[in-house]
Length: 187
Image (cartoon, rainbow, N blue to C red; front, side):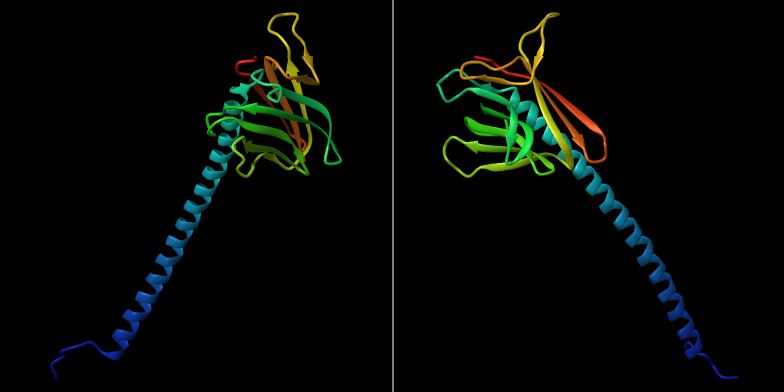
């Protein structure tokens, strides 16, 4: 008999086929894990983005600047913006997410609730989408604390702001959401 000092061609081919099968299986498994991680990261990012929108709203409304000059009032109007019947807000703020005083305009633009923030220094306005896929938006204003307090649908004043702001919006899915925001120093 001959002395064998290597592998036969059949043995090498079988080993290569097994190696390819294991590699393919490992690639599919790692690909599925990677896709799952990516979906989880995207969901967490969307959740953070939504949470940051609300945190921004709390910060900007909680630091309203009114009464320091004639053009620094608070206007919450039940009216029409851009041909769409909708409430809108217009006020100045010294929010924790911005430097200095900014003009904040909150209203509905198409199917989005947007906040347009314009720094007083004159730089470009920045738009934040607070909620999307909405069909209706409304705002109410609490005038004072106590049992006899009431909510009104409009508030326009150059020297003061309401105690609290209630933002209500209806999504295209039929779900509704309400944000109740406490105002900062009111002038």
